[in-house]
Length: 244
Image 1 (cartoon, rainbow, N blue to C red):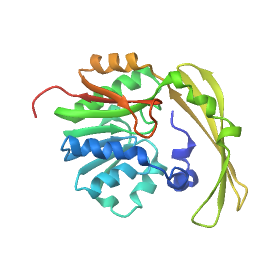
Image 2 (tube, rainbow, N blue to C red; image 1 turned 45 degrees about the horizontal axis):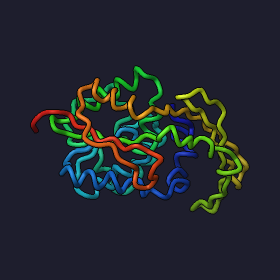
Image 3 (cartoon, rainbow, N blue to C red; image 1 turned 180 degrees about the vertical axis):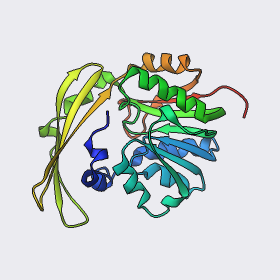
């Protein structure tokens, strides 16, 4: 499940500052170019960074996210009128025929319930035109990245544009693999407000994801490293069979 970092208005407003390095999105822009995508559905679009980058390239984009606060941030950005924003998830989409469906960052892993994951894959496939592509990433569980989610490793102070500063750190609060629940802390210097955000990620094995894709009618084209995290993540490129 996604945490308050996406749903809380104060946290959503500073998310882009706290996650300023988005070089992970370069690969998705390259995929859109490689596939000649003219229409893209971005599932878990958050504050709309990828959606707006795609729209800047003349691509018709649908940005989908269940967190209203994140979408409010996205819709307040310059150029946001070029994107169709939907508050919801891929289990109940309007009719679409897109060339590419993306799930960046932790979007795929935040879908923790097996039934919801299956319905998401089905919804994405339905949204794709025949021959269209689904591209998403998921962390390699053998790397055990959660061992870095502690105060000693993650603690930092980040200056904000409004002259405030936010102190952040994370801690794992429950680990029942394949599920890992962690709590991120945010303390704002100006008023001392301390907001916590609990999130759960599902760490799927590569073979499990490949089986899920096959079961939902996708043809797996490639599994590659995430360029920004080599050896730590899988990037899945799957295609809906058929002729455009």
